[in-house]
Image 1 (cartoon, helix red, strand yellow):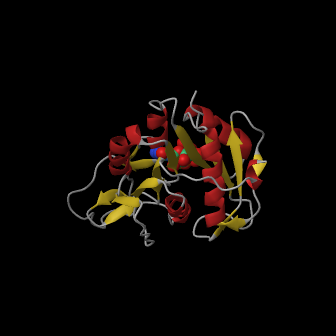
Image 2 (cartoon, helix red, strand yellow; image 1 turned 30 degrees about the vertical axis):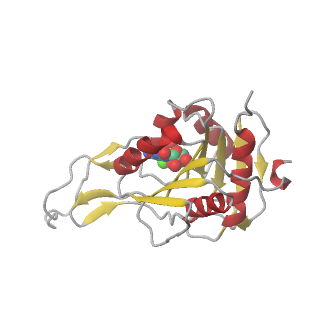
Image 3 (cartoon, rainbow, N blue to C red; image 1 turned 120 degrees about the horizontal axis):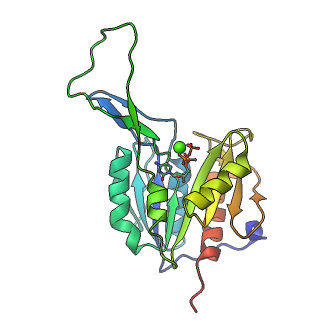
Length: 227
Ligand code: CTP
Ligand code: CA
């Protein structure tokens, strides 16, 4: 099975990896965001670079850093910034891995000045953000492989399979928050791999570096063999 195969080289391959959270500004000093640490995506970028790939890492705000000669980092803040950075690179990559925890909504208005504490309640109106994976999925070429993540708390496999189709992913890496050893801020992860053509396969609880290796192995095997 794929989970026990040898690690594949990535020499000559170019990768796009999104990682970390995004921050959506409310006013000059406040934002909407989430608890993503960026650890999983940074691990993927690092493992791919060690295997010889040239990696473009589009990284949302995080404390973590990574330095490797094969990794080029673009730091971004909002979903829109992340999308624009991805658009520039996507046409040139073999594999795109969407591990960022992109904020689903952002404030319709960004206040020019700090909001003052006036009423007893406050409503901030939000609009849906661009879906980076779905938008790039619509322009995916035959030679490209797209990998997405799905964080689910219920109907896990069903929801992840819906995302596989809607976003034109070749592989979805599903996280269940019900699993011990998985989730935000952790050093380990336990995931289920979902493709259109193979039955779901669940990993052991493993360090994120080893999960990263499995994801890359699966992505390489999904790359279309040249005719
Ligand atoms: N994703 C993205 N751009 C977004 C939202 C999600 O690129 N605006 C990507 C994520 O990086 C991940 C995949 O899409 O690879 C699934 O993200 P997820 O949040 O699980 O899916 P959503 O479509 O946002 O659905 P929901 O949050 O309602 O479950
Ligand atoms: Ca989401």
